[in-house]
Image 1 (tube, one colour):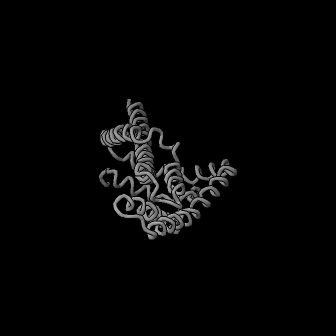
Image 2 (cartoon, helix red, strand yellow; image 1 turned 90 degrees about the vertical axis):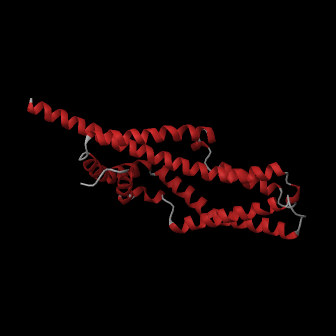
Image 3 (cartoon, one colour; image 1 turned 30 degrees about the vertical axis):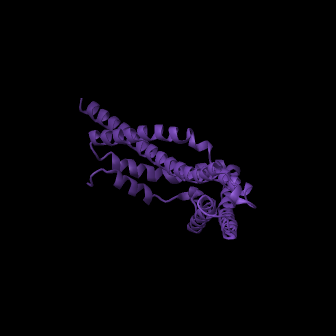
Length: 227
C-alpha cells in the first residue's frame, strides 16, 4: 500500500475524467489565447510606465493601441465561450447536474475505498493539515479582496477602462491611474490562483472527512459484531 500523501491524492483526483462538466474547462486553444491576452495587457500598460521616465513619443501611442487590440481580440473568444457555456449550463442545469453526479459517484467511491485503507490517525493528521492551511489561506484572501467570488473579471475590466480613457493622450494619464491599472491586472490573477487553492483544499478536507466517517462507522460495526 502506498503512503498517504497529498501528492498521491492530487494525482488520483487529476486522473478522474471530467465527465459532462468538462465543458466548463477552458480548452488548450483558449488558454493560449488567454496567455496572448495577458501579454497584450502588459504591452498595453508598458507605454504608460515609460511615459513617467521619457518624453512622449508616437511609438508609445502605437504600442498602447496595439497592446489593447491584442488584449481585446485575444480575450473575446474566451469571453464568448464562457458566457455561451454559462447560458447553456443554466438552461440545462438539472439534466447536467444529475449526469455529473452519476459520473462522479463511482470515482468518488474509488477514492474513498483507497483512503479508508489507511489508519484513522493518518487520515485525521492529513485533514488537520488541510484545515490548518485552509485556515491560514482564508484570512489572507479576506485581507486581499474580501469575498473574491464577487469580483469576477471586474479588476481586468477596470484596468481596460482606465487605459481606454487615455486612448488618445496616454501621456495625460495620472501616475496613480497607471499604478492602479497594473495593480488591477495583478490583483485579478492573484484572486484566480487563491480561489483555485481554496477550492482544492476544501475538496481534500471533504474527502478526508468522509473517509474518517466511513472508517469510524466500520470500526464501530466491527466492534459491535465482536461484542
